[in-house]
Picture 1 (spheres, rainbow, N blue to C red):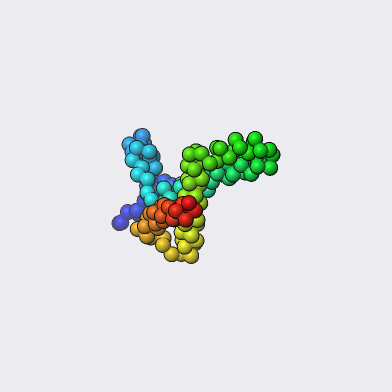
Picture 2 (picture 1 turned 90 degrees about the horizontal axis):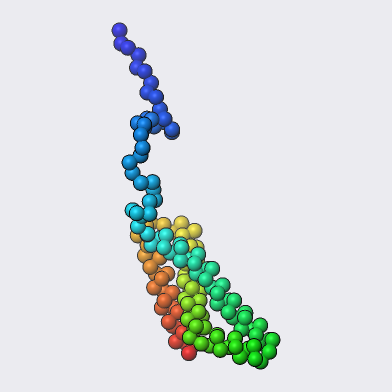
Length: 144
């Protein structure tokens, strides 16, 4: 007579239970083995640029409020805004605005179901970075 086959014990999600003992591998994503990808870098940069523009907005609002307050207060604010510090802040904010704009277009393209393959997404990430630098340089040259 043929013996009836006993069903195997299963663990979570129908998998065989693992042997007792510690797991001998790092948990994913482990910082020692994680390599940033262009898609994650561009996502993080989008968030940073969106929040970073606030610094320039605060500086510009301070400058406008100083203009409405008094001549002496405006002279102080104008000295800061037109100094090398103001130039750096506003140029960085200009780059951030261009990057955030291009990343928004990239995101809309993704929402349409296009460009979702990893190589295409990485090329679009590089295009946002390079394009924002080029557009910033063009804008600075046109404004001066």
